Length: 130
Image 1: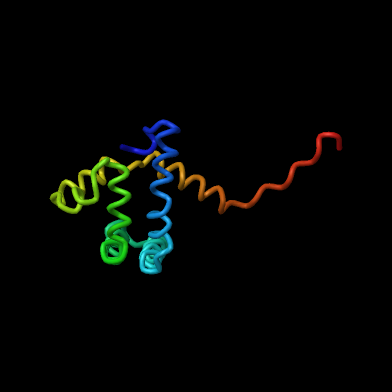
Image 2: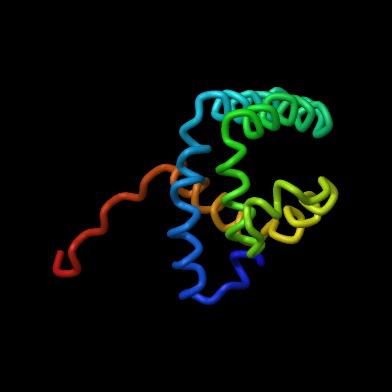
């Protein structure tokens, strides 16, 4: 299920379950290096295919070698399947599960929030009595 389609209560429960595996992935040096390479490739004017290829070439092995269980936990939480079911299913089904959970609306929300954090901070407002 897409996060943007969940009720607030469902979202709260899911975020509790996702916090640890997402934090583990975000803190992994191999993964941050792969994402940094992706960011640099995007800024260098490379094509989408070149940029994506560079990222996948480093990100997929890092995720699957060092953070496979975290990835499975995330998929398990979002699909309702057990980790054993995810591990045993055909790869094409896992890809379909990822696509079904992929939430462009939520990613756009976080991207806009990150973009606004990078913008210049606004000046503090003056008290109304001045």
